[in-house]
Structures are given as structure tokens and as C-alpha cells.
Amino acid sequence: MNELEITTKIGRRNPVNGSAKGKNKPVSSGKPSSANIDKVTLSEPSKAQASASTSKTIASEIRHELVNKFRDVLQNGSYEVKANEIADKIVQKIRENKNRLVL
Image 1 (cartoon, rainbow, N blue to C red):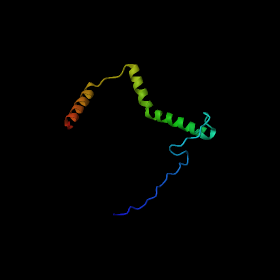
Image 2 (cartoon, rainbow, N blue to C red):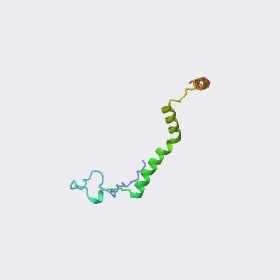
Image 3 (cartoon, one colour):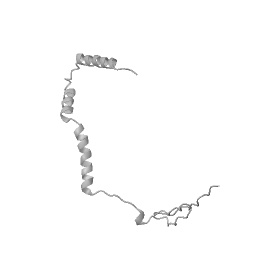
Image 4 (cartoon, rainbow, N blue to C red):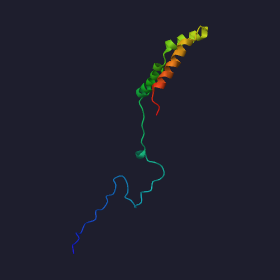
């Protein structure tokens, strides 16, 4: 018969930040200590920069000249519907969709 080699059992280490499995954790008083609370704050310049970048993004998406132009045209009642151009665009879109493969 073959002899079995004796192996040693490798024990688990206790974790650095707490107790091992099956062992009791220390009881705390219910109030978190100041050492256990994480807190993040932004400086005033970074707060100002964040709000400025948000308003710049919104303002950059609006083309004010174009909006004012169409606002004036609509208020004056001088807006003309160009039926021929609209019809041409509709036909063009229909043709583009027919050329696509439907799977």
C-alpha cells in the first residue's frame, strides 16, 4: 500500500480591519465616533466652477440669434410655409427608407 503524506492544515489569518468569521465583533455605543465618519467638501472656487460649467453648457446649446429671428417672424405674422420644400423633403425621406434593408 502507498503511504499518505501528512499535510499540515493552513490556518486563516484574522482580517486587519475586524474580527474573523465566527468571532464576536466589539460592541459600539450606537453613536459613530468621529474617526469612523468620512466627509467630503468642495472648496468655494470648485463650487463656482461647477455651476459656471453647467450654465455654459446650457447656454452654448441655444442659438440666440436664430431663436430671436424666428420669434420676430412669428410675432409679425410674416412666416411663410414653403409647401414645395416640405413635400420634397417628405419624398426624399420616403425614398431613403425604401433603400434600407428591413430585417
